[in-house]
Structures are given as C-alpha cells and as structure tokens.
Length: 334
Ligand SMILES: [Zn+2]
View 1: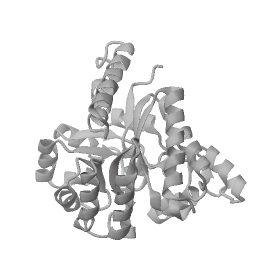
View 2 (view 1 turned 120 degrees about the vertical axis):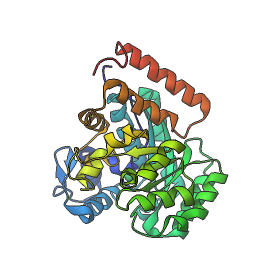
View 3 (view 1 turned 180 degrees about the horizontal axis):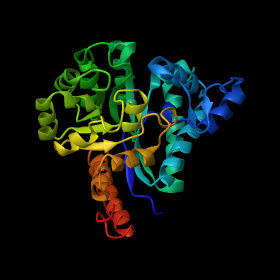
View 4 (view 1 turned 135 degrees about the horizontal axis):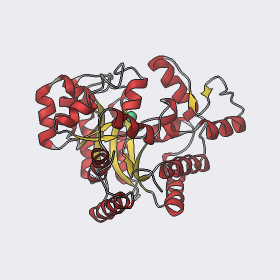
C-alpha cells in the first residue's frame, strides 16, 4: 500500500452512503434517486438542499442488514484509502425514523465494523450523537442509549444537528450522563455559529474535541485557549467549502489554526454529499501548505485524540509509525 497513513474521527454513518449502494437500496424500496446522483456524488443546492438530500439517502437504510452493509462498505473504501482508524457518528434518532430500534441499528453497524476489521485490519469505534435541533430531551435520550449500550465499540458521545438551535448549556445534562459512563466527548461547534459558541461549548459541555471548531479563528484569545488546553479540532475542509462556510481554501483557517499551535485533524464529514473523501481532505491539507510530516502529524493527532483504550492507542501509534517507515524516509518528502 502506498497511500499515506490516514485516520478519520468525524464522519456521519448515513453521510457515507455511496451512490452505488444508495441506488441498490433505492431500487429495492422503489424510490427514485436519479435526480440526486451525479456520478460518485450527490447534487444539491444550499444548506436546505443538503439536509433534504441527506435525509432522503439516510431513509433508504431501514434494516439491521442495510446498516451492516453501509458500515462495511464505507470502512472497506476508507481502508483502501490508507486509513488505519475511523470513528463514526451514529444516530439512534435516525434509526427510529427509519423504523428500526436503536438496538438493531447498533447491532447491524457492529457486524459491519467487525467484518471490515477482519477483512482489512482497519480499527473503528462508534460515537453516538444526539441531534441538537430535536431538543435537550432527545439528546439526553441518545446519551442514555450510549451510556447503557454496553457495546465495546461505542466509546464516545457527541452533539450534531443544526448548531443554531438551542444553547450549548441546554445539553449539559446529556453530556454529564455520557461523561459519567466513561465515554469520550465531542460536539459540533464553530461551523455555522461563531467563536462565542465554541467557548460556550467548551465551558458547558467540557468536551475534549470539537466538530469543526474552525470559526474559533475569529477570536485570537480563544485560539490561544484551544492550543493551551490541547483541544483537538475535527476539521472538515471539503465540507466547509461545499457548504460555503468559507469561499475558498485560501480563506479557510486550517493553516492559520495549525500555525497557532491548535491540534488538528482532517475529516470527510459526509463524503459523497460534499464530493470528497479522506484522501481529498489530506490533499486539501497539502494544498493549504501541510508538508508530508505535517500531514503525518494530522493522523497522529487523530489517534492521540481517539476515544480508545490506551492499549489500542499504543498499537495504532505503532502501526502508524511502521506505515510511515514503509513509505520510506518518513516525514522528509512532500
Ligand atoms: Zn459533522
């Protein structure tokens, strides 16, 4: 394998569905998605269009077996893109909408993950997310599910959905429950809302990572805080460009945050919806000025911030080092 070693800690399961797999599911359910598919990606316009497209594709996955296929399909592709490790956001609320119990949903995903690991060696953990715009009670329900899942693969809890709905502190109870259950914590913040939302999320939810977090750049004191506290940002440059959070890669703060000492990772978020994949995200980092050793550090940051036990982390870091060495002269070429 010649791909640089990669890792991803911010991707939404339903958002990984390839048009190929989605077409197969659509045909089975008699749904027409031909208006959405553009080759290997989906076409949509504006944030509302993206959400509608996402919901339509997500609704095609309805059974335990569908979710096994979805997880297996994505992790297999990701591994062939050079990834050693992946954390996937899963949403029991989405499963319910598709008419599936959260338990069956998780069981299907778990089978897909196990099969992918066996076939390719990729390691994977799951982060249960609450959907913010469904309100604090729904998010607490998701936290409760995550806390009692008792599944070794569920190691984190997070907050996704529309960042403009509710205040971070409204979700403090959900995060307290997840923390008490020993889960790692992350929350989407600083994508559609500005720097103050990032600060408030850190204060109220005490997360070790932030989904996106890029708009922290609007407050230099907050950027210093992120660097000092070692908060890891799950940056998704392709997603940000696609949704118009920034008009161009030149305007994107990836490089500036790195230079300010903030711990960064790059991630694909909802890859076929944004015409991206993990390899492209690393390519965007390269275009933004990240050298080969700096890109390797992005992968190391992801593993260091991963919601895994310390023995797994040690093994992943070892694999990363071996892969870097096998590429030859690690960190010296670009
Ligand atoms: Zn996301």
